[in-house]
Amino acid sequence: MIIRDVPFEAVNWEEMKSERHEGESGYAEWKTRQFGDIRVRVVKYSPGYKADHWCKKGHILYCLEGEMTTLLKDGRITQLCKGMSYQVEDENYPHSSYTKDGATLFIVD
Image (cartoon, rainbow, N blue to C red; front, side, top):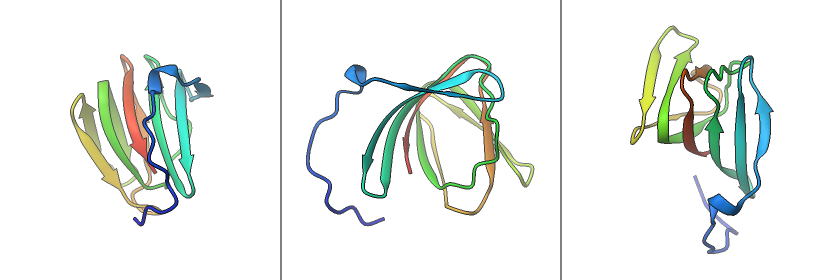
């Protein structure tokens, strides 16, 4: 990743407005900043959230709160808990996630 044309600035995520995205069940509240091709988000998933698609986008995720389960289309399952992260490349390892009790993630993609 090459990071260019991104000004130095502090972001107060607590003051940002969120955008709601419905899942197959539950919803996700996204707070998003876009820097050229780089998207940075804090995403809060409701209890019972289940994604409505298989994602092929690459991400770096860090779990701030709660727990999230990610299914890979190849059958693997990964449990992400507070303090854990994972990364996945673009166009490989299709994945889909759900959470029983809710989770908050910091995501760069």
